[in-house]
Amino acid sequence: MVTLVDLTRRPAATDRLATLPVVIIGAGPIGLAAAAYLVERDIDFTILEGGGRVAASVRLWGHTRLFSPWKHLVDPASIRLLEAAGWTMPVDEGRAPTGQELVEDYLIPLAELPAIGSRIRFGQRVVAVSREGMDRTRTAGRAQTPFLLRVAHADGQVTETTARAVIDASGTYTSPNPLASSGLAPLGFEQVADRVLHALPDVLGTDRDRFAGRHTVVVGAGHSAANTVIALGALAGDEPGTRITWAIRNTSAVRVSSSADDELPDRAKLGARVGRLVASGTVSLVDSFEISRVEPSGTGVRLTGARHGEPVFLDADLVVNATGFRPDLDLLRELRLELDDVVEAPKRLAPLIDPNIHSCGTVEPHGYRELAHPEHGFFIVGMKSYGRAPTFLLATGYEQVRSVAAWIDGDMAAASRVALTLPATGVCSTGDSSGGSCCS
Image (cartoon, rainbow, N blue to C red; front, side, top):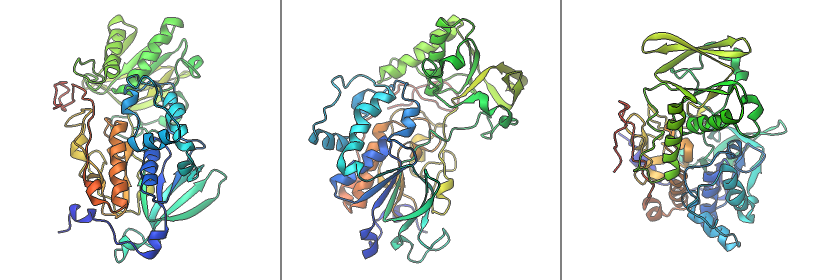
């Protein structure tokens, strides 16, 4: 029997493969970090970014403050390249920046370095990845055959390009989980899609007028939901008639912790702030709500489902879908992937991050071995590598791409030598919603 361990060796490089670049999908924090490590190893690469600017997804929630401080948000190789060009680290490395600050003060300067910026292709969205002249059923010579990427351009044209290896750092922010507890879009969704907003809307900024004086139901039990609830609570203090309902599927939002053991104080503060809003009555918490259907209700929307086995509904003007994210795997259909059945993460990584077991902010160090698939030279990294698990931190992705870049370079010693120290949450979900600690 061939195992995944057997499949993690480097493929033999043909003369043609050696002339092709590595293709990185996505110019977000992890994609740019992958580029930095490839620059340091003098490996040619191209970054294909579907958006018109660097970190397009981060910009969508740029008004939100991260709970990780600067020191956990920057990548070592990127820092080395930036400092060589005269960049300096933000003075207070213990402060948590907003997403926009992360973009402006770190990611834009990184993307503007000639060694990286000259290789970014904006407005080019990868819609499919395969092997040149091979679908997923063909085996002979597969590892020596270039990857083929089909790319949709902003001007409507579609082209194809080849690569020696592919690093998929496309993230998951643009592919949210549906509202229904079944994992499917709730019945009737098309009728109210214009009244359902994506996670982390700019409640106190560009979206203020849409929320002011209206009733919003925020659906989801994680940090994205907590941030939106807190912003709506602040808006309610200024705008009479603004009402907030927080609907969660479980009996409690255990991932939104106010634990004193959380090594990221800003993360713990989220739980404390949400708790005060619920206790004061500013936010109405509806737990154990399993959504199955949505439909128009006047100019608003009605959420229908069950709670403790009994039918129940909620009426609102707007709904914010903060139910988490899932990987877009459609573009990878012709590749041979080995994904976990539960979280859709690489099979060897999944046991470290499965939310049915824990939701710790720490994971064991991991690199190319845990990220490898039967498809030689293809890696899913960053948030997308976590599949549906909600506990990804940027520092994890930086170590992933360091190891993957070393593997591509044939430096197996560096690729295998993984190390990762992340701040613990102090609280974990163990499936029974007890909130008991399982972090070491």
